Image: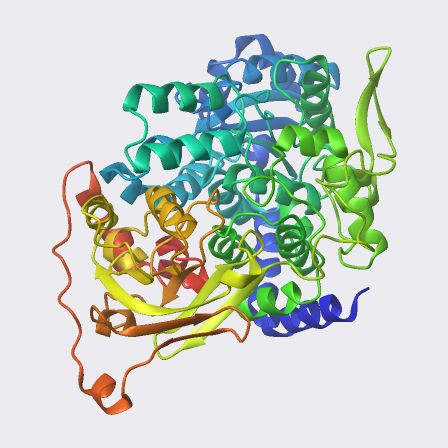
Length: 603
């Protein structure tokens, strides 16, 4: 193993020793105390079996596994629209191996692409906690010996795992649906957005460009949070190997889903190959998730999601761990927004099997983790294919396009492009893998805002036509639910294209699709509650230095110490935001995952 990866893994194991022991003890107690269908009362069983009379006799006999399906299906999310008929097919495939399957429950699944820049986006991060709670409700019936989790997009996969890991004594797999075929290239789409931001094109042209990019069922094709989720499930061994980026509505996709049903049945409750989810998601698997994120230039949102998933399994990972790993993990993929290619081109060039093979060989991935999708992670280094309708796996061979994928020995960059920034403003993270190196240091006067719409209005008035550090505060989890500020990407990109030195500093989030503008995000402590970002005033000179890892307001220390916090805007209501007040009140800081339910549970 790479020494830095080993050192970080050991650091996490030591830090998590007590919490992980408590978690494993919980799993042991849950397995021993699990009532199971044979122990349930007759009325309880009758209720459980009433909705599936075609499987009732098999369920009564109790000879096979009953698999719970937790689904995030809706047809407003293109990625999840493909799940419409999955449950009925899964029931058929379960019967092929002497098992049964039932839809245990549904979880909400919102689309950040729809809510970006609007009030609904303030529900987005806490939809993850809601999904975790809904997953726990779905699995609470004690009638399942395993589960299949149907989810893909931004908060859905982390939420499913956070809830499912509290039932970690059960074997489970994540089941993806695959990306839509390629449409309008992402760079062309971004160019139209920037033209619209400057008034060079109208709404009709913008809408046509967006529809040409997002055009059919399946995951969006850029390497944002949704596709980073899929990458992460592969390197953690929680998919059928190679399942992440196979297009929907293909024979190969169908056979991979069928294999997932058969695989969970084979991990059975009573069998010698019993592999509970909680044993699969250990410290090494969490490190694999972080390494995969860095090696592929994935979404910054996972600096929130990986710590939250880890906490649900009794594991503690912090941003220092990511920072240390980033210095040792090579960047071997260039996928938009960190390159021109989309995930379909990435898959064609070798995809996740190539990435996993390279990173195991270079000692950056733990190849010895307990996997749910196969016997070893090395199986995920093979590419699925059909041979006379039979599912087979083959070595991915050399990269099909070295502008997209490179061997670990000759990477695009020797490090993973994530940095931790620290200074008198607080502690933040920055993704520099898509930022030109001459933009890694920005020193400019601040312009301070309390919401992103005010930034857009100032841009339209021409007030930002200069070197500027845009500071957007009161965007943290406790203030307004930490919405993504992706609508700032086009105007800030326009300013940068004009030659200005531009950066963003915020206690909020940026989208997994953000890229070329340097952004210090997830700033902690957040403004609400006294974070130093609330002390910044218009005109203060701000220095963001991703080379040295610093973030400072260059203000006289005596004046800085004498300042008082800027007043917080009142909590917004409408769009259901008032219903999430409990989540905002309980949420902890970004570095711990910004979760209310984990904080409330004392995890």
